[in-house]
Image (cartoon, rainbow, N blue to C red):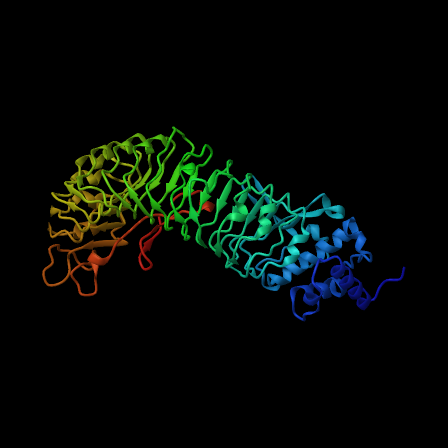
Length: 531
């Protein structure tokens, strides 16, 4: 059989791709479209000159599959502006398309970045498309549906992939991992997601998606779901996630979910991470019916939850991180919290009853971060807080605390952030604080009864002599604290310092990629500090 000319190859390829429904004729005819470019490339420019099937009935053969997946990968390349990729991973080279990848190692882990096949080059079908942090843009084309053997589809941290997800997942029964984090993808979850009967890991966080979760609610294989930082809307209830019986981590934070916190999630037998913060949830925190030790991270802050903290929260015996701040919780700060081995406890900005600092807190010696900001506390700061030697954040801002600052706080050698501002403290700032080696944020402004000098904070043996934030009432016409501009970088009382209006909140918003551990302090858009 004589070799076909370029023109004959293009005609045959167009006919096959159109009659088999791989691509629409209009798309292939549109000059500059990804399909048009891919057709030209595989017909004329590809030096490999792969055979072009002539009969639509050949679609299931190895010959046809190799042609179609090579064309579909080329379409994907052009649709995502492949010429501008940070790294090409051999795409559109003369190699077999099953070799369009590079091996990446992290310790003992081995990853195939690019397009990887199972079954070798000769007969292999693409089973993985993984192109992270590769400066990709454009959109994901409908031709993705040709990869029916796909197991992993991951395009995280490309930042500029736009458009909606194609409804291209009908025949991907082997797909178990989808990672689309940190892009600009819009629209709803495609209906074809309902067909992903083996999907275990879904990350579409940090995009611009919307709609509800109906198309994934029946996927009983899901274990990890990360959809935070989008615009999803839905009213949650106890039955919202009944189908997700194998779920281990769920992050729906920073969306527009309403309704209540599903009790089924707090009582889930496998769930280790639940993050629902920054939504529009109302109602009480559900009771925890039975003891369970799986849930370690619970974040419900920045909602409109009401009522008291349930005493049954003590049943969450594996809990280490708890954030209930920025709600409308009432009653006492629940003493049953003392039964938990908490490392991180944020309860600030609620409507708790007026009380002294709860005594039980000083027995929670594993705490590394404690925030009781604006929780209606009065009385003195307990000397026994000096026994919480693992603390690196203590926030007592905006209460009605009186008395002096305990000398014992100078025992907290790990302390990085100390916020005592906006209280009624008196006396002087103890010089023991000047010896804290890690202290970078000290706020004592808004305490009219404090006096003396703070310059020792910048000359003492501890620390590094330069603070990220050292705030006191050392400005204006009637300063109550003496502190030089070289030391205190925030002197309240000065016309340009609106200290009373500054709510320094240090809630963390950790990410699944870093295992939900704090990786920085962030206070507001202008003032932030990394560990």
